[in-house]
Length: 78
Length: 323
Image (cartoon, rainbow over all chains, first blue to last red; front, side, top):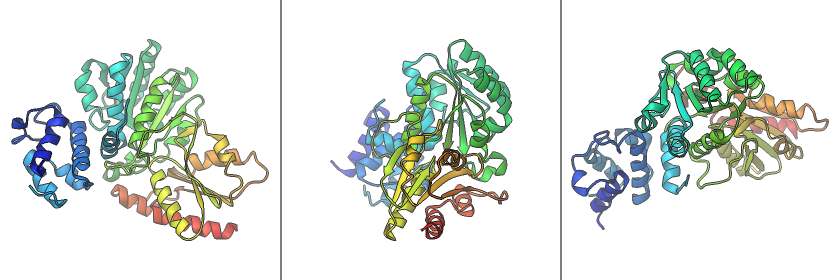
């Protein structure tokens, strides 16, 4: 599985959505991506990619696309 | 409730407030009697998801903490289990008389959740810091005081409070991305302190967010050849006397808390030690002296000497005097 597939899959499993719904997804755009869902997503991404995110990055992780930029800081390339 | 590794990390990222909201929402799924009350701080209390799931079980009383305790008492008398949330200092100081009457005297089954214990409210300033809450509530009879060490323990303390018959004050400390003390699930029992690390020279009793700092301080002291026991006192009242008795063979007893050194954990331990003839000296580390300028959480811990480096330095100095 590529990093992108793993990344998409984490959104799909955390929020119980289809992969096709992930691309334009933003924080609080769906009920599942609320504040608790956000932290659940971050914990799942950390587990998937074996990283630990800084508080600032957790706060700035505002969308699927923005998340890709942040993941790059932790050497997760897409 | 099952606490897998990712859930434990989620609770850590959420911080104690978010962990409380997460746990309460889970408990509410299986217990219809759970009601959440808040004094104009629904989101800040970590109750967003609870409110969305159970809008009819949330009461926002507005900025009226004293009324909130009265409403909670009424609900309790009808058989509900009200969790009333506000900042620690507003609960303990503004609503002190209502807590005394309804929780202390009438022993209503109310759970007060005081968040922002210590310096967690950062830039909100001194008016929002909770540094006298344990002292005031501890002097009221019949109120159990819980002070969890991390996100997981907050969830476990919330569950325990919901199952416990009687008034509880749940004190929450720290900010988001709270350091993890417990990496896996464990047994939590109200009134039973947990030894996290064994040691023979010094016994450190710590509570809330200071538990992680104390573990780090103990590690620094170990590097200097001083063996430290670290005990997590998640229940301040009733205090686990046996845990304190077990420290009598050490050369120094230390208490660490994000609270005034008057009336909190240090005082509680001192009260237990006062009943004993032969005992080691005690060092009480906490908030003392004048109110200092407000700032970020980290800045405040630094100012008051509550970082692991400051804690280990203070302990080392006292230990050298004691031996």
